[in-house]
Image (cartoon, rainbow, N blue to C red; front, side):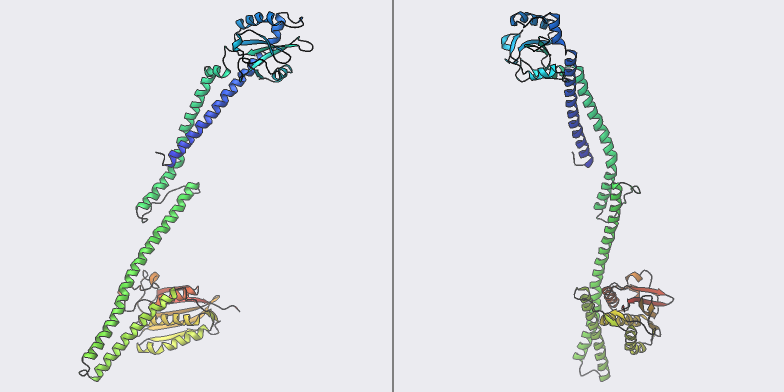
Length: 484
């Protein structure tokens, strides 16, 4: 019943208002009772003195207990709300007009009486002779009125006929009005508070619905929370959730893409390994079964084909192991000063014969007096070899492959480009992904060369870019210059 935040807030508000109302109501009743006591004592402050004056007792030396008892009964009969007692200077009760069994005290504490006679502010509570625990407001006067007191006239205001001020208030209009007012305030506060909480929590409820919908969709579909610009904490929470949900969807998509890539990886590796293995196995079986029947020229051709397939298989397995090593923590570059111009020239010379065999023109352009760069020379050599090999493989017969190295701001730019069909724009972001190949451009090979290039440059903190324009496909990166 109280699982929602709104219900809990409403319940907490109701309990708070009930507690506050009870405290305020109790305080109001107590304050009203105290006010009535003070008012009663102020109005009857001189009652005891007036009783002495009206009965013309001021001239006597002492009041006789027997003679004043009837006087007490007379006044208490006229005003049942008072009780009159005669006290000596020790506070002992000398005379009263009541059955003996109703008197519970033999003496009255005179300290409140003396404070009353000294003019202390009311209400001043004194002992009630008819109750050992209760205290009441009173009026008192010394006898004689002038000089050293020998006796005290003690008048309790609100006697037995009014059992207690509390009992009177419980039946009074003030008490009923206080209770009704507190109840009305509590009910009104609960209603207003519930409505206010509804206004405050409805946006939170809407945000919870958005989150629940996102969860039920398997974290794939997100209906954005629309908050106010520069809003409060709920709006900021909604904005944060929107960003988080978008990030989760991107990560889910990336995981799906990675999963698809892994499936393709298995298929591609199986294909790329099976093809050379099958060819190698077929040629070897042919040579084994027909060793004496195959002419020497054809036998030599079979052996060369088998050797090429074994080299292709060796290269593929080597690339797989190299990429695995680069992904592991053990592959850490060992940077050293390198003359990038000489390294580019060496790689161009290494691939010159292979390019000419395919009818390609391989050119290198190296800007003179290039500064030294700080790289791992073996890793960078592998980067250049993979890029040039990739360029030679994708350049058409009679095409061109170009290497260049030139100063670019605070670094040295190295670029490898080849002529030929343009890389489709949709494929450019994926060319460095392992085993990625556009189906219409597949020419064999496992697609690991560029993935190795990207991983090596990532380890150096260097970014590589791929571009395709005007009949040329180019890869470029900028190496940091060694500080002098």
